[in-house]
Length: 459
Image (cartoon, rainbow, N blue to C red; front, side, top):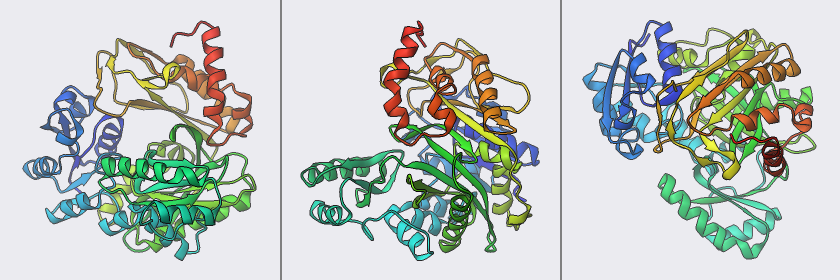
């Protein structure tokens, strides 16, 4: 078993990892930027090391400083969490080259699945259905236009190294291709250092469903069921739940099996997520694989009872999976609401500032993953997510009722948040029926804002 883990992240995921390590008897080292000197993860870890100035490029993306911190504090491993360096194959290689176990998949698997175009081909070779589109990346706008015409409009121009909605453009006609291609490619080059693009047929009004997998270094792989992440705005998830509602058993079974095949095909080990879009006829298509722990992993933990972070650490320690697919049991329904420091009344603009007062919910089957506390500062330098509220119920409606209660108990003063928006969605008729798709929240948002303002809400 690993002895001392450097947590190369911040916020709630750093706290989540540190807590798992504490329960396993593993020491932890936190790293922090100057802006995070008083952050919760620095207090919970056994040791904490400052690695640079507030901008991420000078701290949480500063590979040299992170490696030096790990070596100076005697760490034997690095857990990257999600975001920052978590899907950097070069970072994984550098860790291993410095005698540090990277708690994640092999660098080769990260590189393969990090290239969205290559990942599609890997999935296709494993018999996993993929969205119609180019076999690889495009040489330029002209080739993208030819591929788009072959697929039929509308299409998506997608960055091969993309993620988080960056390097992504919808194109509805041929005359839009060149401008959209150049803009998306430039955005991807700036965000990921790689401007290569590919074309994918746009599945209209799909659902976004993903399957959690675990795989060890000995070729054993299992799935932990699926999550529905369709409640999004600007390609950013707001609410996730497991299992996915309103899908036929045959669709769910086939999707789960496809995810395991994809993981085996790329030589995967650790925790990962295969993402699919599902059309109105329940045809599903692989779109990408996230080679890291997911923000929404708690809903899967709630319905399976399996601690995914601990399993990551065990796999990285060289252990075989201690259970088979037949051992995985699914119980009840779980919902997660992400709470972000954003003003949803004004385009979800970030709202950094000081938390004046906070009260999180409690009670049976309610979990809160957060790193904020009364008096802490929400920094303008990083992602605006400040916490996640997770509930588990006997069935979906039971979970919805628990989430209503949990959200109504939550008080966050000092910054504007998306808390009221999540609360309103728990009463929305379409959400309650499970009839939503990835575009539903965007279409519904003006109405929800109107209702909120009419009721006198000021967030």
